[in-house]
Structures are given as structure tokens and as C-alpha cells.
Length: 480
Image (cartoon, rainbow, N blue to C red; front, side):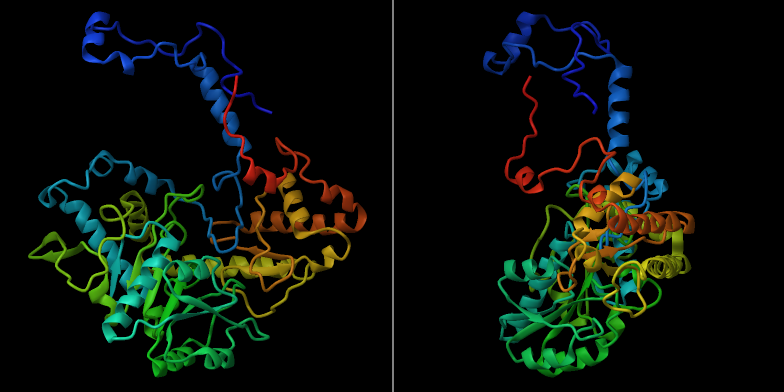
């Protein structure tokens, strides 16, 4: 296991040279009060430049990331991020902008934001977009705030949001935080939303149905038009979670089937880095009914000039400092411009092909609870292996020994011992074949040497951790 930089410390070794101090020490004391001046050295490790570089290179190979290998986390769309996006986003003319600069000096940035909003409207079939939300879950909250503002404007704020049991995992939390009651809707035997259960729970107190499409089983919710008719009759709105939009680009536009609110995960579908809590971006698109309530400021275009407009009296106000995560917007904009409409459609087509190909390779080795054609992801069950004493978590840990990140496990909750697998469009057939071979080998090991799987991983820098204890008793500080 790699040593910490503090453990590599060698007295008086250094990898830098600084110019002579130009300010006499006595003047420093005159400028800086004594209480701000260190009495003891900072205790930083003393190392040469190449030692530092090698240390961090070694750490980077210990950590799994998209540049290193397949990252099949279902519902996360961990696709490879083109490096041209990074180059553009880090150009000085963009990264050195300050959000408080006069709009005369930021016309290019405002044009980028305006055009990105227009692209997202075109992709989704919705009428307007706010770029402010900082991530998908934040987008959900903003969408629910817009729904509340709409109903309050109608004279009845309503109390309930219907959520299918196959919805994205953050939906119930967002509903609760926004002050609504979450009402669970069952799935039918095909893994789709049960229309009869919607009818049973839908009434004049329903504000919206919050549906994920494709749902977390990787299945396309083909009843959206019927669902929307039911909602319209009750005066309720249709919210679509856009976490799985990577399956729909150029194939289906949610606004055309009656969706009123949709959040986009720019850090998923539109290929910007994500993980570790950020960065992210969760723009929200809306139908005509909700435009007046969008957050301010909004970027408007008038006489070929771009402006920040705050003059929307019914707006829910600002939901993010300044105008959103601009660095993520740049990457998403570059990605969309690079691919164009035909390229975006191929993204979804290839994501669907990859998921179905991988599902076919694995379906006879695990339980496949729902056999309908997959979209961009699919869900297997490790129930057969659990009967032999090996859990889905055990198999996920064993997969690390083969150099692959594990898929999402134990979600969705409606599938026992679930494994939600999303290969994305950026993985080759050879990579998918290799992943499938490793999964099948693990299944064979469950039958021949279950202890090997139950005690995995064996080749990682640390063995299996006590995850519950790690959360409750984090030890993240070096004490020399």
C-alpha cells in the first residue's frame, strides 16, 4: 500500500526554489499582525518534485475512474468524457470570467448559456429551460417548487405527489423536502407503472406524478399518453426525471407526450465529469404552463444582445448563487455542438445496443426479473447465487479483482439482490465481452469455491472494509 506523503518526508529535501524575500522581516511584522504569523513551521512533508509526482500517479492507478476502465453504475451514465470538452472549458477566456462582470463584457458566456437552453428545449420538446440547478436532485427540488408555484397560482397548492416504485432513488426525498407527501405507485407484472394504481390514488389533491422514463428497471414507460390523460382530468402535472435521458436523444421528445417538467443531468447525458459530490448541473425544462415561474435571472436575447432579466413577477426566485455551474455548461455545450442532432441520436442508439447485447450475454447466468427489451440499462438479480450463500455484494466485491467497477447494487428496491448495469455507448464490444466473461466466471466460482467470492476483493490495496463503521467513524486525518 502506498505511503502517505508525510511518511515519505526527508528533512531538508525540497522540489522548489523561491526568490529571495524582498521585504525585510521587520517590515512583515509591521504589515501583518503577530497573531497571524506562525510560531512553528506548518509541518508540511519535505520531498523532491519527482517523489511528489510519482506519489500521485500511484494513487491515481489505485483509484477506479472512467479513464481507467468500464464503470457500469446503473442510472449514473458513467460514460467516457471527451478531452476536447476539458480543453474548451479550461480556456482562459472562459475560466477567468467573473459572474459579477458587466453583461457588456460577458456576451459570449451569455450567448453560450442562451444557446445551450435552446438546444435542451429542442432535445426535450419543452418550451423553456433554467440552467441554475446545481445537480439532478437540486433540479428535482426546483421542478417541484415550480409545480407548487403553478398550483398556488391556480388557487390550490395541493398536497400529494405520486411516485412509481421504479422511480429514481432521489425522488421521494425531493418530494418530502419540498413539503409534499410521497404516494407510492406500484409496478405491474411487466415492470411498468400500474395504471389501475394511478387511478386509485389520483384525486384533486394530487399535484403531479413524478415518473422516471426509462424507469430504473431499464424499461420504457410506454403508457405515458394514457397517464397524461388521467393527470389532465385531475388537473395534475407530469414530471419526468431525466436521469435516464441517455436512452432517448433524437428518439423521443418528452414534451411531445405531455411532460410538464423535466430535469436534465448534464453531468450524465451530456458527458461532463461527475462523482465525489460534483461538479454537476441539473437544468430544468418546462411546458408552456410553467414558464412564468422559472428562476431568475433568465438570459434573454434582444437586438442581438444578451441580457440578464429579473423582471418575472411570478418567478420562484433565485435557486443558485449566480446562474449555475458554468464550467459544466461549457462542457455540455461543446459535447452537443460536436455531435449535432445525428450524433446525439447515435449516442442513444449505441447505448441501447450495448445494454441489450450485454443483457443477452448474462441473462442465462442470473435471474432476469423483467424480460422486456432494455433501453440503456438493465437489472439482473443475484437471487440464485444468494440461495448458495453468496450475496450480490459479495459478487460486486469480487468484480473489483478483475479491474472493473461494480454495477449499482440493491437498487431498484423492487428487485431482490438487484444489479443495475449501464454500459453506456462509449464502451466497445470487446470491453463488454470481457466484462461478461468476468461476471460469468464469478457465477462459476459461486458454485465451485464460494469462499473465494465471499472474501473478495483479494487484489485491491485494501481488503473488504466495514462500510457501516467507516461511515460512522471516519478516520481521514493523518496524525504523525
